Image: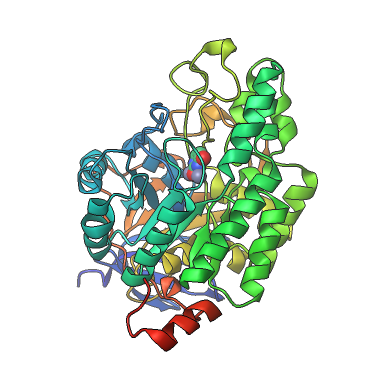
Length: 489
Ligand code: DUC
Ligand code: ZN
Ligand code: ZN
């Protein structure tokens, strides 16, 4: 008799966002087909005694093989990026297909597919980045792409070459409302940043530390409040990405408490790093420059609080990998001013180990919250659930088997990205993913890669429940309804 299953993971403790229980996981044709005690034989078996068997992580914010608006190309392509993700326990990534001004969105998506398909080793979907909301883009390309499975997109309120002013942002939000897409917002007040930057440069204050000074918390909280107000006017959910400032977290919490569908994401750098890291000697502070910047110890505590109390639904890496040289972080070497430093940190591989160690091992969050923040909520928000983000009969067999006691000291040479440094050099963590499985295939086992280039698959995202409007009409629009049958937008 042939074995009943392709793969059986025995004796592990299964952890989902909702539950923790003992069972064997039985896999056939890439899917979980049974969760039971004393399962029948598998063609391949893994003994997970003493281990946690968790859904493979989903990283819904990472930049891979992307060119920044300043023309700097990421250090990671879809091979190194997804290999690095897999070693860190992540089996699905959602990077961006990023439009620059003047580009056709459709062509941008084709280009990212051409880059990802031959290289990715884990599954991937795409968010879009909209920087040029022309009539053609908003009238045709974007609605068609949303229908084709690209159901979320990011917009920037800052960066000269990317930013969307409030008027076009309202157009975009109205379009999202009509089409059921989820809008992700980079919320920082552009003029505050630019004005601060000019004042600092005038005084010759150019060191990396001044990147943090030029991006004040107020710039983040003001724009966050504005983004939420615009979304409330249109009655459409939005997701605030990479939240770093306690004041912004407070604005989000308050909107959520009022019952609005406002979602939020934070990232490892905002619980692990501080603005003082940007004050390292020479140019070393540039290794920690990202936008928004890391804040301070009180800010880290506030972000932890938001992770614990549910203000943040997702913990993503915002992996934006730039090498510490002229090809990346430092286009003018030691003469690079803070304004010219490429913005972003690597983090695909360290995201989940940091959340596990600093969150679960230190007792800040439960292991079920860990799964929700690292996998399940990403799948729910972006229309991949229940295929991804959980361990359940019928779901893809994407799992990471964690040794909860494994001690690891982070160092750049341990990691598999192409960045050459880690902002977490020397950090000691407890808990590590030892075996990583994607659709029943062993991708990583005991520190070795087993997946081949191009074995990852593209995932179409459904329109998520999370993106649905609440049906709340602001009073002024209620007035319009008395005089007109036609919706205003
Ligand atoms: N925003 C991101 O999402 N990533 C890197 C830099 C930035 O501003
Ligand atoms: Zn951003
Ligand atoms: Zn980003």
